[in-house]
Amino acid sequence: MKHLYLILSLFSMSVFANISHPNFALADYYSSDLFYQKLNVSKAMYDEVKPLYNQLQQSKAHRSFDDMLSISYMESPIYQSVISLAAIRHLSASLLADSNVTPESLEHSILALFYLERLALVSADSTWAVGSQRKLGRLVNQVLSYSSLNVDESLQSHTQFHHAFNKASELAIPAGNALVASLIQDPGNVMTLTLITGSRLWLGGEAGFDDPSTLNYFILTSFYSVRAIAMAHALENKVIANPQNHRTMRLASILGGWTTLPRRWLAGIHQDKLSQILIEQEHAQWFQVNPGFHSVTLASSYFNEPQYFFSGYNYLMQGLTSCNQDLSFRSCSDNPRFSFNRLVFITTIIDYSIKAGDFNTANALLGVKNWPEFHWSEWQLGQSAWQLRENNMAQLHESWNNDSVDDDIPLITTTKRQWGDDTMTCQTCHQQQGRAWTKEQEEQAKNPSPSISVIGQWPPVTTSWTSSEQAFIDCSQSAFWDNQAVYQVSQQVQFKHALYEAKWWTKSEQPNSSNEFDVWQFIGFCHEGSVR
Image (cartoon, rainbow, N blue to C red):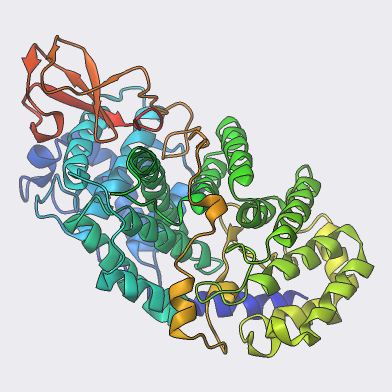
């Protein structure tokens, strides 16, 4: 059984083996103005992280420095020197180091914000971390501020991403980077932001067993997803008020799974049980929005957790019932975006049935491979996993229920991880493999089901985008900035999904257009209450 798992693991690693990490060198403190002026890193802090930097450089062997740093963080997420070094590493390539806005500088900035927030939570003196976080956050919010919302899908980067997602997974990285470039050009495009979320979740979830890039991809996913929810919600409100001039973002109902999966994973890395519970409650509310989709995202989270296993099984059965009521529902049917939705859904039920010891149900469902409408013969990426279940049911039941996880193969919708919980992936469902679709079918796949085109009651985000309930910012009690209002010192306002505080009396000065020395102090990104 272990050899079979290793074969599957090696296949997973080969999908994104071309991930590249730029070389990072911690230059001499006085070699430039980077550390002491641009980043405001003290010589004492530099001296604190330098030995760790040297240690990681000496021990990296076949890995990059970034890989070793990510591993160190996942193994010691409260070790201050590791967090400080990670913050400095990403700050050195951020918008604070170079004001030139590129996909790389934007994403390094987001990663730096994550580590700065973590440092502020664990450090006895958070002055530098909070100050740097606010300076950098202000720059990121300036880059991502928009004048209007839209869902323009005619962009070449969207076509490039769909091609990679459905037909050419080896192009996943450049396709994702092209989306980030498009977002910089038009930060108000909610569909671009949503596809970036999907891209980073895909890359992080599909990374190989011992590939630490999952960490940074999931940090990025968490940031983008929380912002995408706020913007999609705001757009829906505009549609309700003026349906003739606006349209909703068609993927809004699946954003819940795309935000809760990476944030719950990060909370697990941090061993933050309370945040995990809050995120689970949030995820359950998204199930009510789209049962067909979130039955699988919830089941993927709970398969390896004994206390939640039967909850996961129950979500699957409820999702199946929902799908049977509307077989055309996007999340329940095969379509050009997800060519093998049904086979993967069925295999998930098979896995749960095998683990529960219900071999009769598992065997009955394995028979659908003989039904022509399921296109099993064209399911190239999933056939070996299916046959493994056909031929080793008793062994799988035993390995999934014993005390050792070393010989476990992952659930069909997950990838096994060396660090952290298994991550959800659906490479076997969204790649077209041997299946062909007409252009008419591809166009039809863009239209959402009427039952989810408007969400109405949006589930609230329960933690910060960094997965911490401690860092959660609720902006609902802060007024939206008003050009005609007078603001006194310490008054807070929200603007473009971020919270700002006045440093002195002001009127008609737009928060995100000011610099760090002007009247408005960036406090942080809103997690709730920024939609009207």
